[in-house]
Length: 465
Image (cartoon, rainbow, N blue to C red):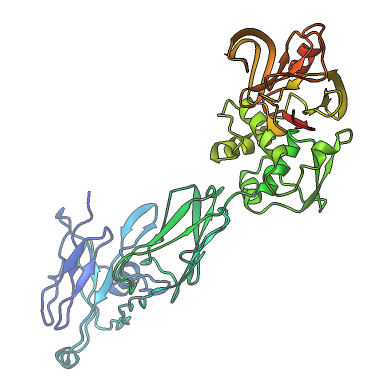
């Protein structure tokens, strides 16, 4: 049951507001010199002898404390003798000239038996309470990255600086598109740190909402755009996974990026670590001369096609968002190239030949036929984009007659030109309609086909017929 209601023992000429031990508010009427009747009882009606009023004052009214942001008058409770004892606080005593003339009288709230006021009662002290001033309004001073900035590293933190310290009335900004991350506040700054980061070419918008305590009348928006991923980093990752015939070594001993650290890998995609590339031994100058670190070239294009084939992506040789996402995942999983590296070099000078290099070794050399003057084989380097063990080739001969041939071990590399087996009376000169024809007898054509994969580079050099 609730403790019996407190009684007003004495009051000066003011209204006293009291709190009982359970947080209930009790108001005493304006009275001058009013006292409780002698021998007043509990609500239960049992009479008790009057207790010592000084002891009652000490027990019933704990000290009033106003520190650390606490407000005087907060309900409190205590335990004594194993039972709950209600506590009382004086919240407001309004002194007046009449009270001074009548003499200061202590207002005591008690429970249970009423007590006669003692002739000598100590005068309670009062604690003045002051309403705290609201925090000074703040405004946005600067943002980083600055509004309109481009080529931003998507893993960079976002910092909003205010004109004064951030308080509980200052709402945190919001970021769009939403990504995982956290805001931290310190002094006059709020900083968002992405868990991983924004991908390339992303427009990021930061909104600073208005609120109480700020001078901002409307929300402030600012935006920036992330940069492109680095071609140099693309080459580094393709090298690590064995898709190009070069080894990459970081300049610093600790310069390599942890493969399972997604944030660090994304940061390196924007800003790659320093290092050097070196060709694996055994490849001809026709291949090594194509290389240029940090720029797009045929070796990178072919490697991307091979990677796209392995990842069941559209094979266009372009390292777009899907390729980068799969590439970073492959690095984390250590999913390496399982084909090895193959390069095919066809020369039309003199006796026409095909040299196939695999993993730095000259694996196959064979005489071939290339295109006649009416339908020549173009010089250049091209990645293999389509392969068949067997297919039908249809078209027209230079004389207008049609052909419909069953062809084996076919690897298309430039439009309708392919490396394939085809029966001829001999090999080594211009005979085809643009294809590179291998002997149809023996295992050579099949062996070439088995070592070629999607993205394999085929270089044709020499005089065109």
